[in-house]
Image (cartoon, rainbow, N blue to C red):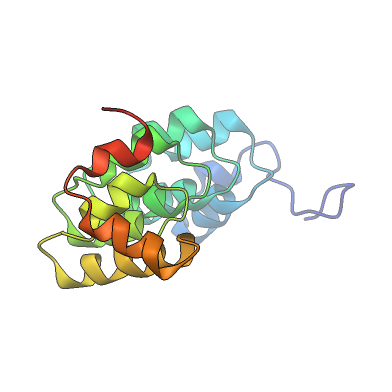
Length: 161
């Protein structure tokens, strides 16, 4: 059903209580879903539903921060890939035990450069490669990229010592 704006309606949140997982997943990913419904779905037993909430571009920041501690790596990966996830949350996820989550952080262009440099030294070759590609995309020239990679104190890149 479409509302007056031509968008799919979330009704009176009955869809969020559906026993059909696909229905709940659509509601969780809908940018028009009200906050209170997203809050309920962020605690759903299904990882797929929580992941859809984390992928939703309208998920509130506090909910993304909560989902960053989810027990399932696919949910944390979705948080890492969400363009609205705050930097401090991304910084936490950069140290995640799961390489896929770190890969998602490494591919996020909103990461502070010193975190990307750290990920360019990750134990996982895919994470390292992704961090290097993101750094290449962000650095204006080859010399700047080399400085980023060779700096033994990457924390100084962010302006903190």
